[in-house]
Image (cartoon, rainbow, N blue to C red; front, side, top):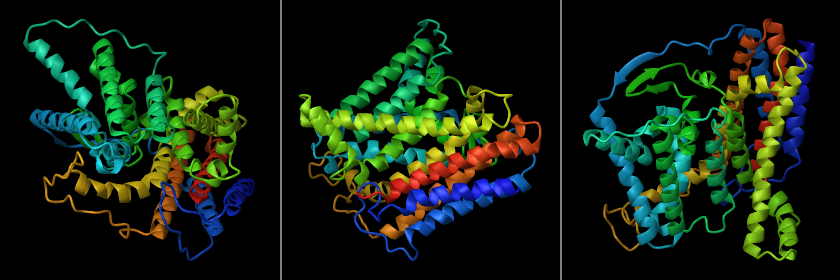
Length: 474
């Protein structure tokens, strides 16, 4: 126990050192104003580290048997097929509206429905809803609705469809990795990220790609493995107490879906990409990256000197930063796995990675909540006037076109508390999942606990990174 506490205290010190040296700053996504905190920022770092250490010690003492590996689910209700069809129609109608608004509406991003729906409701809102409601996205997925409707129509017409090809095992979730990375690149790197017509074109291209994949490998097989957004949202739904099995809704303990994750090829890369891209979102708004003496201006000038235009040089610079942050997250996770292997050589790092990768899911959610909460809280309100005037041409379909965003709904200090709470809760949940799996992987509880010294270090590292990014200057 003394050795455990020594390592834990060391982790707390590292977390504090990583955050106390940082300047006070605005929060992510351009939140205007400064936090009026009742205690210094470095005390938040100490508090977060203490919570992680206390959780780690508590798990080692009180959680001596696996509780989340095999759980009993309880069926509660079953929705009719007609409702599933209706939800598919709604999803397809919303998709059509987003595409139409992108092309036919004003090209001013803040007055057009398309950017807000894609970046706020879809990219941020659906993950939050998936944790609360379970994996509901398949029911409203427009490309899934099109694929299933096409298949149904062909069957009714007596047309025999070719047998789908077997999905390659080696391909795994790698298409989803590339899809999430591509979307993050558009959001964080592409200079025309807010152009409604270009967003509409990319949305159509993505839908066409999904339909082609569904036609070749089968709708459900493709959706579970290669549809980036379906896989992305499903990952978060594994934390939910609600589990949809077809049209049947079941109840289960929170977090218990995560241990059921099968780490096929690409799974570790996907979760590292989910965390790394969100991390870069925070880094890209700080002085370390964009300040006068930051890395980005220096790199951009290097590429301009090579003959690239300013915009292309900027995109190349940010692409390097995006990939580097994903690599950094992957390296941090691998470092923890290498440390765990020092406890016992029974498992290699690849095996340990597949066994413990599910513990990164709540961290990915914590980073989404921390970095996008202010965007969702403020820009999400824009839907009140955008639904009345989706094209930005002066319409007032529902009488709410004159609505505005209330920036007083929550202040900068309140957002800071939400962000820190999300980071701490996410990392505690990650520790719980890792500890529960360790009790299965290692024969003796003592070895299971010792292996988690390294996972504690990983969680402290991710917490430090999160606090660093939240504290970076805008």
